[in-house]
Amino acid sequence: MEQIQTQLAQLRLHGMNRAWTALLETRKHHELSLSQGLELLLQNEQQDRENKRFDRLKKNAGFRYQASVEEVYTESERGVSKELMAALATGGYIQNGESVLITGASGCGKSFVASALGHQACMQGYKVAYYNLQKLLLRTKMTRLEGTIIKFFEKLSKTNLVIIDDFGLTYLEQQQRMDLMEIVEDRHGKNSLIIASQLPVTNWYDIIGEETIADAILDRLVHTSHRIELKGDSLRKKR
Image (cartoon, rainbow, N blue to C red; front, side, top):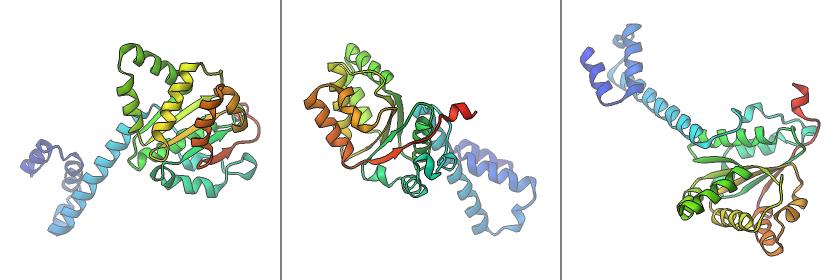
């Protein structure tokens, strides 16, 4: 028995090792046939690997909140329908490379909803990156100075879901417009983008600032996007 545990540990089959240890401790290993025991061990190993992958994806994403789609308020007066959240929770929008645009006043839960969708994507095995817009644009500025901007854009373009929070807090400068255009263009029809903003989508044109670039960005975002327009008082006040 000890040799089996040692070999499982050496092979880094941690899920199987824990399941085998539990069987020994409860003296259940004699009650199972070979096929039943093997099935149990394999199920535990698979679950262990899925849990580790989820933890790794979640850590790399850098979410603002620890959230789940089950925790999202779906009352009609909040502007979030159960049907839409259920559809987004399937991850179909990620497979189709579609965008999700979340708007609403400060404190009404935009970042929480975006984080919840991101967590759901991680559970489904997708790579996710969560950014505050200003920090994202600062990152592009720094990588340009370091000469690694192309590598950064390539990595971002291969990420299944990019979440950009706090869009529209400040007007964009010319290079920032170009960087945002690059990100949107790389993802259009291929990988998904979630954008959360205090401003309604009709005001985004002015925030972007330059007519030609604004047209290009919004044309790629608006027509194939899912909309969540949050309403009501600040949830922070209720706490």
